Length: 324
Image 1 (cartoon, helix red, strand yellow):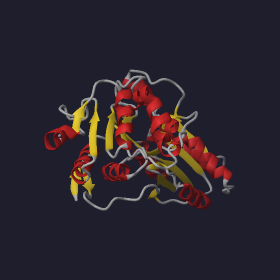
Image 2 (spheres, one colour; image 1 turned 60 degrees about the vertical axis):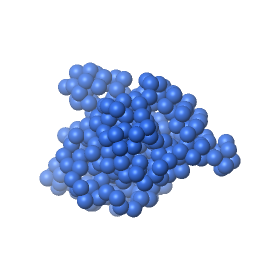
Image 3 (spheres, one colour; image 1 turned 90 degrees about the vertical axis):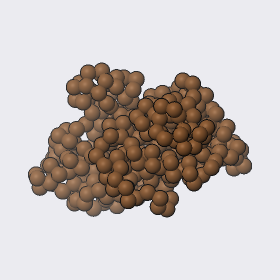
Image 4 (cartoon, one colour; image 1 turned 60 degrees about the horizontal axis):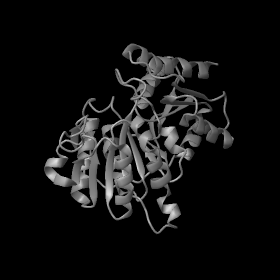
């Protein structure tokens, strides 16, 4: 057990993977000599030499080369500095990496891991703040996860790199420098998928992932003060997604709220609601989705923070759902 921040846990996982898997490479913009814009790749270049290196500012080149390297035996771990920038390389991710196994009839695979981070931060502006998980979840062949704790940041990355499919690991920069927590390092590779109950309750199920998990847990505490017991179900893996865990919880509570930082329209919360409705789970009230309004993110931190769901807004919306 080691006391690590979220960012330090990612770094620890990268060191382990580079040590245990000689076929791994770590590369991207500023990840080598500078050690990453957030310091997450610090020390890799010094310890592993040219297996950790910097690239030109070309997301298409980064992802295109990663697909080729993965097809020929490497396990590249590439960083896209902001999730927004992955759109520059959408062809390489959607049309190439996600298709390798299918178009080769299973003869080839692309075991590459794409690390990126997303979400609002002070001054992030419209081109550095988008939450794009739903876009990639629409693409068959891609695995997607969003860790919210230092332990998950470590475990999910290790699992992703051992997977023989392309995996998108979406981190959140608001978590990189948070408080230190005990992290078990060096343990077995965890299985992919699954959900966890972060708080038990009987009145409403709140499904969430990523950085919103912490705000939802704060909200659940406030709701308890009102006599509303919310069950908080976190789903770090969005593909594969643990639909059965959500259904089992909703069947007990009878109410569903889905909370994510992404825009409400077209967000993955709609898919969660559709799966619950399609399964015919008995509901005492219509399910709700809580997310960012459908607007571009302003530059002013106070305006941006007003758009992203906070504990007070989550509490009010869920209270209205339960109280009717």
